[in-house]
Length: 108
Image (cartoon, rainbow, N blue to C red):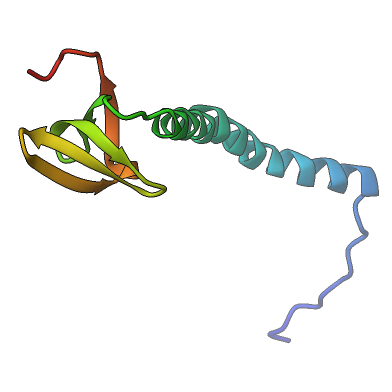
């Protein structure tokens, strides 16, 4: 009396259901593609360029570090390098701290 009767409904056609599920996933796939080309790919390219710059360091190169220290490379190691910041003053830093290789003659 208070509860209405429940009736079974017929199932929709299989093609329509598949198409609607693909259409609902389309925005998610498009967002991932845009995210890849806008954020992930440029970041990977930047990392590759940074790694190439660090691998190409040589003794005598003038560099700038992430902390803003300028100096000339005096010794190279596998993961560390020695940076001469003034006459007789040397710092040992990680290779990954190198941000930029400066043109020769920048530091006087």
